[in-house]
Length: 100
Length: 474
Image (cartoon, rainbow over all chains, first blue to last red; front, side, top):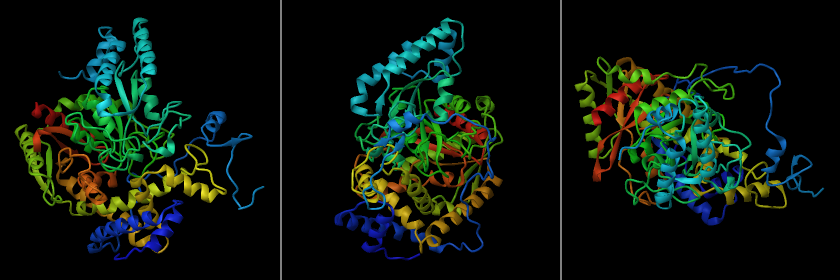
């Protein structure tokens, strides 16, 4: 997986991850991520053909609970911890670029 | 002075020969004397603890049994949710947040009669091996304050080592209980994945995270495991089995057990650390165990697999910190700008680095080359361990390649820090249990930890070996 990561790649990843970054941040992360990716090349030596991926150490499937009503978190207690709330809802800034 | 154990504390409090209030005051006095220097805690909850200890004493006086941890003081890693009590993950992004519920582990400890002393410092979101990544400043190792306590559960390890609390709870994603336990000279356990409920543990890497205890003794660790393990319907990865019974294993000895030595273990441990490991093998042989050579070739690739899987899962788990539902917000004209500004201001350097590497590894065009490959390496490691456990009951390695290191000594090189976890990471990738037991001193007279690894749900045999090593180390 010898890939040379560029500052353009890092800027794209930062955007995907919703992290504002300065030019200096981008330079630093480009250098550090490149070093890590170089180290990760050790796995290129492995023959992984036919190996089944393992995403969970202890696979349990279709874990369900009985379909009965249960208490939920207290709404007021939850909303009291939000940065902004209004009319029993979380309040956020404009989502479509227009101020309604 | 040998610290009073949890077993002795609970026995004394239940019988009325010891008052929970007095036990607590002894610990709070030590906190008052040394906490300014050590910084084990993000928050000391002394008022709640005093009320709780008084209640325990009242119940004993009324003829009630407060439970198997009656009056035992406990420090909780600050990534465990505590209702109405600030829970920060040592991150600015959660500063001031009070969870609306308790973690299952916290509920179980409370029901067993424990007294919570406070919330302990950690590397931000449990990402680190030194507790230097905390947004609220590092924790110092009580054995040598010029050195780190390890991490990420450095505050919990330091709290036990300084006897600020009799026991502590931490979380271990790649070594975050075992490595600080080794560096602080205490016992630390990472249980089998799914043995302890993760409900209310703030997620770092969900397929790797496990909650476990820090204690002075192996018996205390067994007692804690008996309280916190067992099925919980609120965690869908919880193994449907009752709580483990481990204290009954401790006196069984190691005669006839096969102790595996990994002959192709990655090099890099200091000579003093390896000498302690050799002494541990010899001690177990002297008690009737046999030492067998095994190979775990894929062990070497654990670090790369881990540093792809863990950041990938973290990048997804940490997407929830967006300034909408909890924690801090940096105001901006639209939601996307608000998310990006909030996350840039709220997360520290290492957390951002892991989110970046994880996002990259999961992004279109790179998924198969990185994340997909890492999942296959997990399988290889599991296969190699299975072959090794066909020959051996447990495997022994060093917990950490070095003793406690000095602040700043890993510099600005993330990879140097990551190498601290070489020996602890593989068990997380496969979900096996492992624990660190103090065994001798290595470089500079500082404690060394020996790691005992066992197959899935192999805690009974792991604790037998731990008890034997503890006895030999006396």
